[in-house]
Amino acid sequence: MSAPGPRSAAVALGVAWTAAPLILLGGLAVSVATGVLPVIVAWLTKLVLDRVVAVEVSLDELTMLAAGLAVAGVSVALLGEAGRYLSAELARRVTLLTKDRLYLATGRLAGLTRLEQPAYRDRLHLAQQHSYSGPGVILDSVVGGVQAALTTVGFLVSLAAVSLPVTAVVLVAAVPTLITELKLSKRRAQVLTGLSPTERREFFYMQLMTGLDAAKEIRLLGLSRLFRGRMLAELREANTRRRRADLRELGVQGLLSALSAVVAGAGLIWAVLAAGRGQLTVGDIAVFTAAVAGVQGSLAGLVGRIGAAHNALLLFEHYRAVTAEGSDLPVPPEPGTLSPLRRGIEFRDVWFRYGPGHPWVLRGVNLFIPCGRSMALVGHNGAGKSTMVKLLCRFYDPTRGAVLWDGVDLRDLPVDEVRRRLGAVFQDFMTYEMSAAENIALGDVDGADELGPADERLTAAAGRAGIHDTLANLPRGYRTLLSRSFVSEEDKDDPETGVLLSGGQWQRVALARAFLRDRRDLLILDEPTSGLDAEAEHEIHTSLAEHRAGRTSVLISHRLGSVRGADRIAVLVDGQVAELGSHDELVSLGGTYSRLFRLQADGYVQEVS
Image (cartoon, rainbow, N blue to C red; front, side):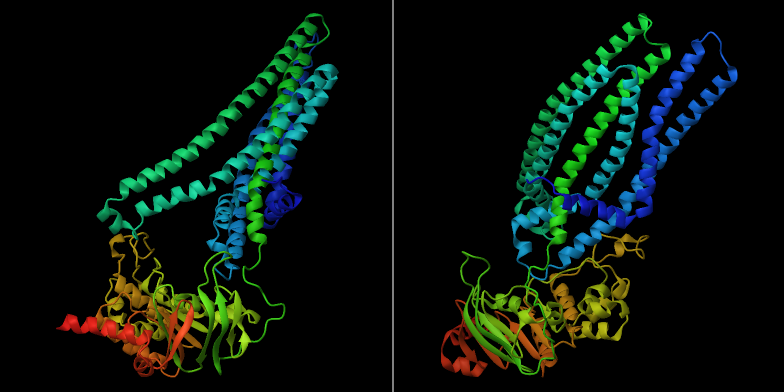
């Protein structure tokens, strides 16, 4: 890991200043006062002791010194509490700001490529872990460093007033501590960075064992023991590496602590002998003892703060790198204007693979989807159908060739504007642990705040998907939470009201989400009825056919009976369009489509007979 640069430090301190400038200044003021007060207390203590043992004592002067000592002691206690509060409040505000910036940065990832990279996932994991703590630790180190520096300077001056040689020895003894702490901090950061993949795998197995998605299969196949063993193996590996680092640090820090103790002990012996020779007073011994302990303590604190800041900067570099990255899709310098679709969408000699060295998924695809017409994509698994959908949504850009919107390359158009023109249901649709109304309203997020549980557009979309009656009859209707993992404010007194839908019901909710985007130019349906029974599939496809009439749409399905009504059907074979035509034309052609259709039709006939 490279050394942290000034840019990371500037970003971290800039975050703290932006989050709470007044609290930051207040913390610095408290730090300055807290750094000076121990030195004042030490000198007041010296003066009090010297006056107490003096032959002639002025009670008024002694009273004033004692009162000053008491005030200083109370101030130290109060400032400590104030400092803790300001530090905690600053941490809260910094956390809010850093999380906002971090997820704003991940939201700028318009495509999927970067999220599929393990190295980026590890960096993102570390950024999530240390985004909020980094500025806090760095700032705490700066504030604490100022305090420790003031205390150190004050006590060094006090110590120098008693003995310059001892002062020099104390300073020299601090040098190896500083060098060692910087090396240890770098090692800590390297250990944490190296543990990121291990921790992600551990978390993965934890999610498998505690989540609902895999619960049925884990219990049926008896996988809990296997996954528990793998999770514990990852945890043991992480613990071994942490233990190794801790033992190394224990040995080094032990030697440094012993060195500090030897220096302090030798200084105390010298002071006692000097007092015995009449060279030091009782007050001198008190201030000397406090100064040696104060210098060592404040120097150790300063070195520790420097090490903590160094470690935090190394880890905060991950956050800075994530938030500094732009979109993973090229942004045109002068984006074109996206007009409503008039002519159609064209795949022009499109080649695509998911990375260098990966096999080609699409090989020179040429296909035109006319505006207002429906296009079905069929073919074997891996033929490239879903990849074409991903290119239409511009989750990726073609490796070669272009996808054109009315003749304009999608890469020359604002990606957000392109997606606002699309409605889609994906084969791997999402099930959001939110209310039924919210699950559908997310389909039109621009107007979601305006949609209520009884909104006509929302219920109409649910009705078109055949799920309205089911949702309306839930315990709280459309307001019912579709989850047992959380409890809504309305359900806090009756947590059993959360409802779990079946897979087919969830698929209808996802369809309703797509139907809500009925004002879009292109509707994409990727296996929209794969989880439905035959009757439900027929019902949904009838509704879809009505909804698609006169609209531009792309339909993917392995069930060829559901695509026969499409205006055009493209058959993909090995990443190429092998056949193109209507259902009747392709059946009469006697090619791949005809063979697949007859195989499926024969299967249904055999089942009926």
